[in-house]
Image (cartoon, rainbow, N blue to C red; front, side, top):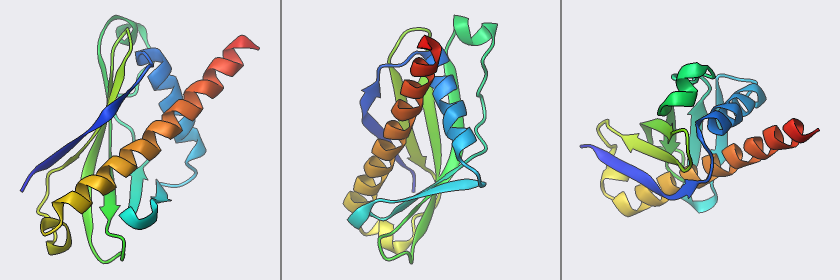
Length: 144
């Protein structure tokens, strides 16, 4: 069963700002993955192996898609589903974040798609906040 979940929120960053923010996030991650507990929704793990992350002349001229993998854990920690995380941007804003679940869902998630969607959206909001934080740091360093 494939379930695709896209964030309803866009981030006002271009491809260069997005790539720099993801590099900042990657540097902050001192392990193979970062884990966030998202209250009653469950837990989100994001792998640090970002693919498609480039800062070169090609990035300045076209679209950019940065991808990594992760996992969504049920609130009780008994069910997990693998996800693909994509960050899509272009020369001009906005940037769009998405999570796609493309594996078989364990019964916990298969019987509670509303809960799975809420968890995925909470994960995307957390990732969005991290990207915005690192983008702000990049801008602050550029001004000084």
